[in-house]
Length: 424
Image 1 (cartoon, one colour):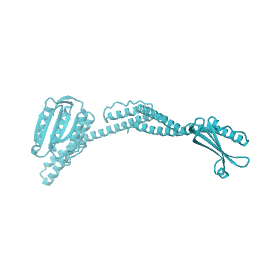
Image 2 (tube, one colour):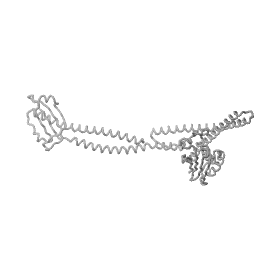
Image 3 (cartoon, helix red, strand yellow):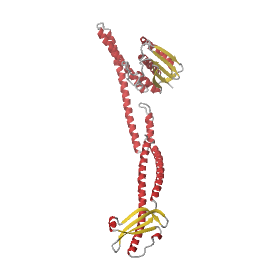
Image 4 (cartoon, one colour):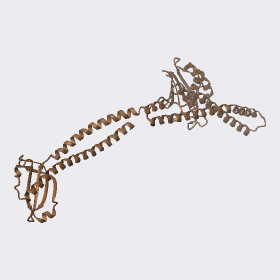
């Protein structure tokens, strides 16, 4: 859920609870104020009646009293002892003045006459209909709540969306940021302190990452370059050692195994060095390369090398398919894809090479199941049956494609492993 939605939802819930609490408080405050004013009037009228009654004066006729009615009745001492002597309550009674039952507020007094007898005086006065008032308040509060809720949602969405613009700009910049490449500087001006600190923290973190990345690339490039000469020297010395007539067959076999290992190490080293150069963008030459000519220049050599596997190669190359790139990297791209098709093929297998519609497609037979698409372009990833390969061929292909913005996709169709490079 988006942050602005979370904030809006939580604020709406908070406002709903606040309005509900306010509504209850408003209702009780209103009714209490009305009751207070009514009770003061009732009390004054009731006390006047009691005073006149005890003084033996003539009381006004209850049926003719405007808005007020009263009842005086005799009660027992036990009744007087068991009831409060002053009681207020809301009720409904028949008013002679209106000839109808109306909501009323009453006060009841229990008092004692001079002869020791008890009387109960109940005074009624018309008041507002509190049930109607409750409904009216409820309707208006619902209307107020809806208006406030809609207003809060609109204001919150606008406010949060406007306030989150620096964060969204930062996200867009991070999405487009490529480690080790020329990136546009972060232009994310804001007056919000937290976003300022976030911008600074992200910038420092990426700066540290760039420094570490450059150090790693420099280390790998230097190490690969420095290792190449000693490896070549070791291989030459072992080749010279093979000319020694005193060597036994077992010694010669061990030397040959060692030479094979050194050659694999040398190939891995050259591949790492090439990857470093690609990552460092050291291939600045660009030319319009014919994919047909590139494939035809590489394919015969690979067919002769892997002739023992009796692999059938079918070609359909359109001369109009070209790519703007460094010529040496074009050879590297095609060579690695074709070599991958030969190395991971089966004896008597088949390879199809097609160039058309701005793409190069190479398909080969092999293991009868799809490869792990999430890992085949990782460096040093080996398939289960080819542990002797360097595991860098497809990684180099992917690096070349990333360098020039080409697209490369893998699929498994009709028992064939298909690699498709789209140049445009």
